[in-house]
Length: 306
Ligand code: MN
Image (tube, rainbow, N blue to C red):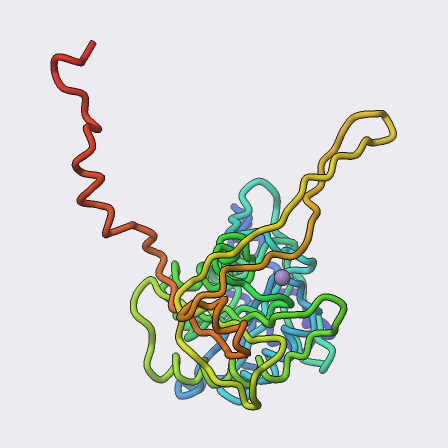
């Protein structure tokens, strides 16, 4: 089945026309949502950039990012239909994933799903977006992703999913002062510059860049510095309430996280009004601890056994 083109200016393709829908993926393929360049045959000199986020497909940070990157190549937007902030690195395995066409505020087409940011990247790589995808960029997140935040962040998870699939990736986040509206214009310029360099130089295997822009840049354009991860300090408090049936429920409350302001770290950079670029590797092995750990008596001695 090859349904007719929707109102969105996508060019549908029937990749698996005639095949029985044996699995969810087949179903998705049959939904005919593969995005192409819209210019017919692919121009191999133009990079294809997949843009996702965790704030939802209609978040203003995503639009700013998409518009900035459009100057570098063909941008395909594939983002969740709702807010997945702090969803971490998710692989949806226990519910069907739906994929729909939508239109961004500037009239450009996008794909959206009920899955997580990492699902968007996986769906794209597994066939819903034409390959090759040359770069994955996630963001621009409303709120910084610093230090341990990267383990919670859906934005960062989108970049991780790109890297796992062998595609260079960048996560971009904008620090926001509570009570103020986020301005994504500087972060969008930074994202374009970083993306251009990644397309030019590539990245080491298993590596992505985590980019954070300060809410109050010390100068315009802001200074960009290369950093390591700092240490976040969370100020969560557990709030206990009772539901109408008298059963307790819990809610994480408290103030936004702070961090230890150290030179050379992402947290230190933002505190100085600088843009932070941190190279992150998926290999979380603690290499310096390996030798020490090997001296531990992890295997019981023969006379201890039994
Ligand atoms: Mn978010």
